[in-house]
Image (tube, rainbow, N blue to C red; front, side, top):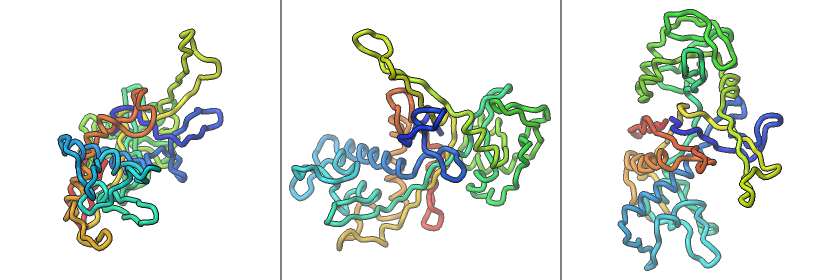
Length: 320
């Protein structure tokens, strides 16, 4: 769940909209956080965690100091002087779980893989306060809701007793009373907070994209001339973000270390699927403190993991 607005940018602009856009699914046009972004920041945070666990005692690799952070974070290519780069050791939790690259000397794909984080519940302002909106196509990603029925394009499904039309931002929709217990149960299993479950609404997949894109947070910033204290000419820019309170769904797939080897050596840093997941989980608290994406200095990026998952080999862990 987004504790702050989240901006994972594309480096491009939307004509007539904002200067700095966020990543969107190419089919639904709903914003998302790419799995590569999640994997990258979690790798860095796990490396920070492992480095902190050394209590200032340098780790030795081949007789030389080799810190987990920053060496085992990032792209892993050594510097021009030969220093830095991934260690690539079978005893390194960072390199075994997230993989490593060593140029011509090969690499390792890693034992954990990350899906994109898709919007599951999106907060929208209404005359009744914030309402968290979702859609059938989104709910079908959740176990127990794989065959959730479609919703008419001109309806808003809610469990509320009132059938008065309700606005979702600029859009006014007639309310259709609907039994939401099955949806509430599935979301409760993912540890979605009760105050969100009490304010759910479901619209059609067609409307969901429009509702989300029409209610993103858009901010305006300007560069200040330090000499005058006034705004610099032509330095005004806008950027969009997923608003605070957005709930996203993503999966972490953890592979069995016993099925893989690094060179000729067995993986020693982790020995089970659960151990791989636990290493990934050490990065979750850092997401809530340090965040993901851009504009971090402007109060953006922090995420709280509600359900860290605890899956087995037959039931891979889920994160949200």
